[in-house]
Image (cartoon, rainbow, N blue to C red; front, side):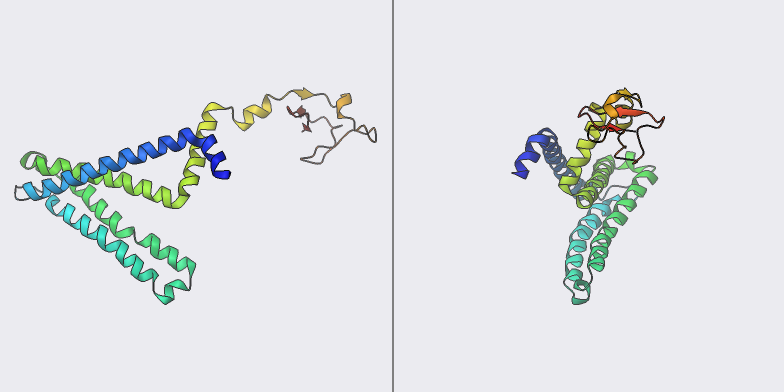
Length: 216
């Protein structure tokens, strides 16, 4: 039932997120194969940066890091502490980020490779920046979770489509402090604000909500 309600409320956002994820996955596959082909076919041409090694190093690190994390998490000393397990899991992304930073530095430092070996330079550059976006999205998914991302997207959408809390409160109708609607019918006394617990008889502004509740 809860999943059905979530789908009914967020179906457009969920569908858009799934489509974007699928499209990005296809794009990364194309960038991967293009960079691999460029490395094999054009690695022997002159380039002022060791870009020919980037794909190989990136692939090896991508295979080795998850395996090392799994091995460490299986250790008895790691299973005794949830914080240590979290630290090990987070540290598994450090080698990948290090390789990506190395690749970004090479791409920005290249002076002649764009001309002497463009068929290697540009596919590798596009693959590197695709990896940057992939790591950012992966970090967001693991940190917030799918439901958290949908909720965050919904919050942003609500801020765009609906007035903010401050504007909505300022737009509420004002009620005079001596208005009869502020009198408690049971004891005939002026009611108290349920938020600040102060009496409505003061000079503070009183507002009425659409559900006929009153607040300072």
